[in-house]
Image 1 (spheres, rainbow over the protein chains, first blue to last red):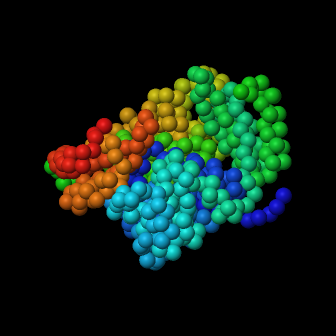
Image 2 (cartoon, rainbow over the protein chains, first blue to last red):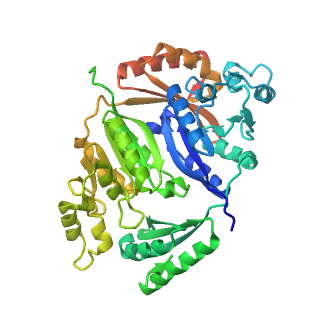
Length: 247
Length: 247
């Protein structure tokens, strides 16, 4: 096993629609799953409104705290899309047309359709690098360790592939789930004992309701497959003793 | 129209399962929708891991910044449920059995079934007030302006009703959605003009894909119904001029 240091990320979800409850954020889950597979651990997520000073402050705080920062939302053509301009200010880089983005969008739209709103999507920190968008033309961008993605989940997800080689993570974070037909309080004590003996494995316990029955999902997470397997064997041991059904 | 000051809240989602991407957070949406109806605006959400010092710091920061703070997750019986003990430390209140909670749980379970794991759910800041749980017995609790709820969405939602009279909000935040068969860039300029003339209404623009077609949902939010209606009429005006279909 290698001993790379832990590589960590923070995610900033930008959007009044999430804070108002209208939209459920599913981008955190997509980003975190993808980052885990690259050996990057998400340490914190903040959901903030479409307000320039808040975006600037949060981005500047996160980019010094985390190896990688991802923002979602606010890079479209409308008045409430202020992420690109805020990022420019956070980095103190001129906000204007990024030439490559302008050219991509100019080619993407039919002649005469590349209007003011669409042109706005080519405006960003002028020296930013692009994140290509196979779904809808309009690219995301990154400056140093801050990667700016759109809020629409299907588009965001389509853009992650091209980003993979920009992220240098540690060992992939592996996980294994054991689903049991029991309730948490029946296994709490035994699980604590296993956790205390296996400090390097993060053990989570999550109740679920499926097909009208209660259950508990035990999730083991670690970069070390052997440690997960050993931990799992200790759990299976007490599960057998208690005659709990594995589902 | 009254002139109550804005009442604001912060939400702290506690749980490694959300940061790892395994679980999508839907509690923010439920809490924010409920709070909006009570005239409370959510200003920020943080998703943090099950780590004591992080919970303590975040709770202490939020409770001084916001009128109301809500935490979700980490109040169950297992080793990774450390919210109650962390809240005790944040407030410097003894962590132990809250008598009413103990009695509720003792009555809830059959004799002999009130085991160590279940007893743990009665442990919290000893002077905390309870939030009753009609779904599964085990109560949440609050200390001053910090309300601690479970992570399981159905249980959390069942507990909000009994909390309503504990929250003193401002005017309810109203919203109106106009769904258009168009793309954002077609309306961006006109929408900016409407926003500039209607500063008291928060106008959001959100692309959607439904039944294979593109559309844009325009969401108007304000505590003032008349201002929303005026703003809406101005949007309808340019929508008609552009011959955009309302859906």
